[in-house]
Image (tube, rainbow, N blue to C red; front, side, top):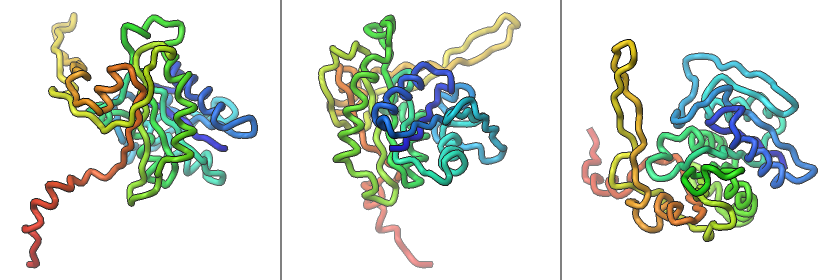
Length: 263
């Protein structure tokens, strides 16, 4: 199996090393793992692409490349340049440092990369590792993802639907902020919605007297509904959410159907 991996934390991120190990396990001894990741951190860029400027591609090692661009750019570079003659069987994005659940999925570059791959017809999975007080100081904060990701990926490859609609399905995996041995199990979940907006701003006066605003993440995962990614991961479960790029609000569309008219 040939696997393309990327992330949004950058080419030097610890989570990318974890993803490389997971990918090697999935690919097997005769497989190939190719890394095409951002040259610097690109957290929060969502599905951004470098539409009005070129992106520099640098080969760092065998099957390892850095791109001065977004995670979605990296997928485009991987699919249409690095692996243009030998397309991957699977695209993996992550392992992100921090969770990507509920509203976070709309901001996440990790999700954006998987979405881009799916839009090009490739099987794609995004993976994220919660950080919290129970894993922050572990020798390996990615212990839960490192230990549990490969079996879940194999199950998805074996049984999950991928190309059952115009916008192909991709999958979002999140691992709870606890040691691997304490993960309670796996839950298939909906994308959650918290009771408050995910982000706010905090003002700060710099030493030069200028006023700046820092973004702050203030959402409470326990405020999301039971059965959603945010809630179940907060309870100690690994979560799997099926996503696609279709933003159509079907219920609202039906309610405005009477507006159809010819002019």
